Amino acid sequence: MKHVSPTEGILIVDDNREERLHLHNVFCKDYAKNRIYKAATIDEACETLEANSIGVIFLDVWLSPEDNSLEAIRKFQAIDEHLVIILVSSDGSDSILEQSVDVGIYQLIEKHLVKNNWHRIKTAKELGISRNRLYKKMQALGIG
Image (cartoon, rainbow, N blue to C red; front, side, top):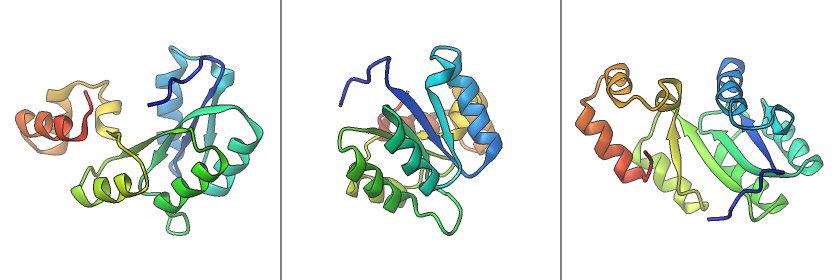
């Protein structure tokens, strides 16, 4: 995987304003605020990507009906084939993971984990699954 330079920005793409702001707040603790960009649509994200030096995109899997996340990945890769694209989803289902891998995505971060500051017990309770099941899912996805 590509090493992301501290001079490169982070682009958060999510149609939910609260989710964008939450991720922004998570990253601005350790990252320069002027290097964190937010976009609500794929078109807005492409414009931001073309105008700025972006190293990582955090992309919501379930965008609005008119925005297809997997098609967005193809568009982003056409602009910069070396981007690190991390899918963010509250649904880490196998079909999403399989489709993601088909377009070159190997990391999936669940919103619930980020929201709970990676606290597994709290996240498992919120998702209504056992901590063991969450841990196995995280291992399968290669996260945490």
